[in-house]
Image 1 (cartoon, one colour):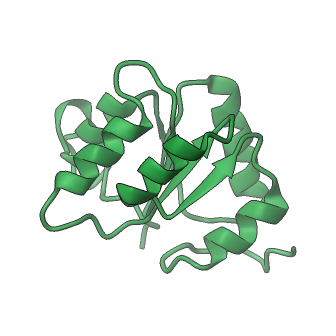
Image 2: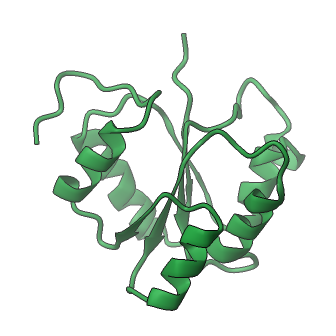
Length: 143
């Protein structure tokens, strides 16, 4: 049985590689699907355009959402997610390169579960992600 993916919205290819390495170092078996901006997140979640194949692009178990992206940023995606009925069942973790209290408060108000400052450290990421149901690990991920 295929694992449900983790959806990563990140426009910087170097950050995508860092997250891929982080997922691997945490021995997470769920595949990582990376999209370059908020418009792609919405298309993915609506199974539209290139993401129309429901089998290849199932709903994610977790959304890792960059705040600053071209076209649609993280706050706009969170606003769209907050407008959905019923609410999505997957948690959203916001990724950002800076701590901005106003943005953080708005993201939490819109439903974000947590903030992670880039570069993301394994010691911060692993305990957080272990708390989510549906994340599958290979050999015991050591802290």
